[in-house]
Length: 123
Image 1 (cartoon, rainbow, N blue to C red):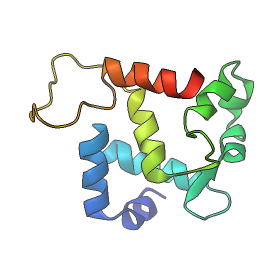
Image 2: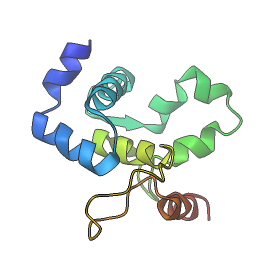
Image 3: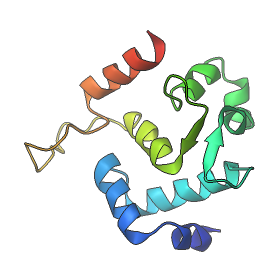
């Protein structure tokens, strides 16, 4: 299944996601494999129902809040890129790993972006 995931994810797309999210090549490939296994409709997107079929989320008291984090207001589907962008917010903050491009965008897992995600989803 891992080789299937890597063949369906183009190299340039993988590099863009890697740069945008901070995940490694192997993490992205593994998460893509998980994403495609959750995509029961095989349409390249996940619905809330796809997330609710994850047993750990179904029994988690915060499961609905976690699921809601993946869906901007009014959206009912998330593609792989959106899935990865949301997961990136949950990556640990690494103070010693500063962005090399000081003029570039702030990392998705920065403290301010984590707070911004909280404001967008729950306020």
